[in-house]
Image (cartoon, rainbow, N blue to C red; front, top):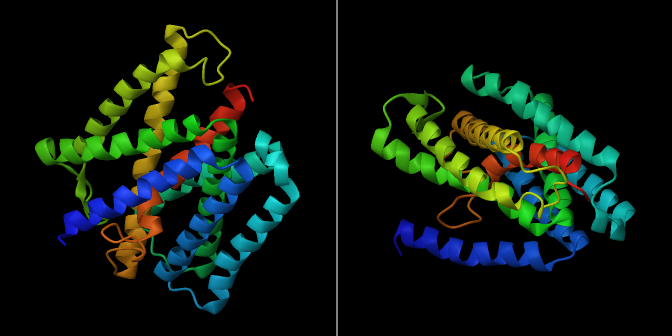
Length: 282
């Protein structure tokens, strides 16, 4: 089987499974399923960071213990999302990381030597993404899909725009295949997608008028999510480059590891969940 055929076959199995879980599982089971995926990603993170046993236990074991405790405490209450304090703490810290810490880490190519810093980064990034996915699905599976679509559209459009128009490299020493033209192409596609979704805002839980200013704010927010997804992708690329590996793992044939598939999503989901908390009715 060719690499492309392997990639397509894996996606043909994975995508229906994810969609079925997203739309059919109750929030507590969706939370358990996504926690498993996050723990696999944490294991891959620990591998990229070359953690010893102690570092692995702090990251993977700590996430497993805290996630299980949150599930046990929340239980059926997850039907209405997380307690406000959990959501704001986890997603707020993750959003702050992607806005203020990850960009200079990537573009200045900070050396990755501190196990403590990498453990904290892994905790913040992965716990924030998990809390966000659970919160959005509890509100509506369509919110998860809409947010994921921003990332997928940005990535796909950037790929094709980069192939046709790409001249100026975005971060040549981190991810040589990405170009500024590709990023701009992805943002244009996301703006079109966001504008097309605007008429459905009230169905999604927005109580305000769908006026031009609100539509412009929504498009700007979608563009911000798409931009953060690029940072997430670049950040994982930098981790892999420092580790000297092509993929974070081998669990998904043709795609690499779980972290390879969710690197852009983990950056976009926390601010999406915060926006849903602030602007959409429960």
